Image (cartoon, rainbow, N blue to C red):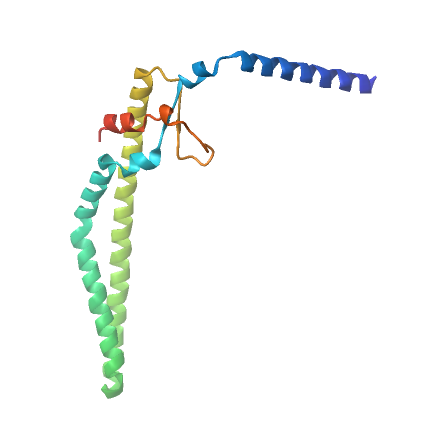
Length: 177
């Protein structure tokens, strides 16, 4: 009896699968593709809309980055000078110079970390703002084209997408920051 119920359940499952596959085969594929589109996020993030904002952000931090680079060069030169002149310096002078250099290095590391965190925070804020703008632009294009589904083209789970489904440029055109 137990075996019979197992066979019946398996048979019903097979019948359901056959019925379902017949249903989906009879559905025209054109009607499915008309409601689906893709957006290539790599292209979107390389578009001038985003790259121009990123360039503005880089320009904003340029003076601080250049100042840090100069401090790094000066610190390196001073460490090299100490190393070169160590033999001719008295021990107390070496200790004083080393202490001063260690203090400057610690200040440099702290300043560098603070600037890096600030830059990262602002870049993440820009990225989030841009992603939200892309979502909004995608929604507008999808509603205009009466699309049911928009997927990203650059996903590893999407190995192939026909160019006819690509709405990337239309989305880029609608993005407003």
